[in-house]
Length: 385
Image 1 (tube, rainbow, N blue to C red):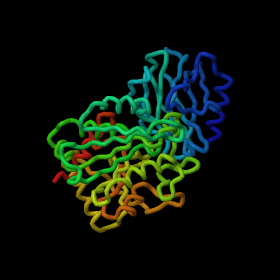
Image 2 (image 1 turned 30 degrees about the horizontal axis):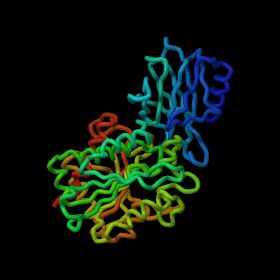
Image 3 (image 1 turned 120 degrees about the vertical axis):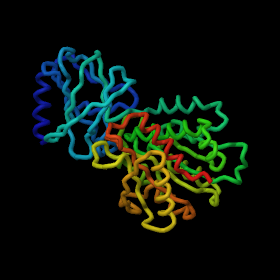
């Protein structure tokens, strides 16, 4: 009901008062200022994420609002065009740092939810934000860690450092080890994938017996954030112009993908063992399990290895992912998991892991701690003998 949204927007324009203001001058912020408006009298905010050549699916929003009434509930209305885009559980913060979920409802192409005005400013987002600044702080905290080394010598097209982390037990000789490559955040809006990667890294340096065991057998190479420039500028990134990052692997035009491929190519082929690409589903999608993987093999030893991986995962996480078959290539390019599977045919497996935004296997909405635990359990599922 586009006409309903336009009617409401026109109404708000005439009813708006100067007290209510949108805030979007910070990292990762995204809101379409051309059509966003508010009504002070009804304490209602009406908005849509940006829709352009970089936000082709306008799934990501993140902004603040101030100047609203404090004596009544804030009503938030989001316009959407596809059932997969509007989040079922967006997040809200009163200080821009500590976020919590609220329940959203879809009706007549409007996604609506409510906020209790406990402070003079509120921030709303598709899901838990994860900024490039947070990544830099996280990475810098391991500057003197003996298990982790940091390569930040390469840059994005926008001049920002691309981080590649190496985790292993340096006492054990490299020639006895296999290599595991992990990348994340190829789509800027998929912020939750970075919490999963944090959980992985925290586990690797935790000195737990199981972590020490896999570090003695493997060299982990981790690129925690790929689409950095779009993360910083608040773009959604998926299917963006001139080419989606995760469709740019066969004949890459993006310097970030070219850099990662060069890093992977330096890995001794006989020692390259596993490739993981961490993603998120659409926030309003209908995935019935907590996350899914895309099986690109359709049978054979790699499928068997992947199946055993998820069986081991079940022993730690106590739930099973939903399995979704994926096409090998897309009309607009090749994905990272298929590229690695095709080029390095000796891999145990190469797979994409999709994290969910909604309700987990315990019947509650995913929290940051759940994503951290997911990262740890994924690495525990890697064979250590």
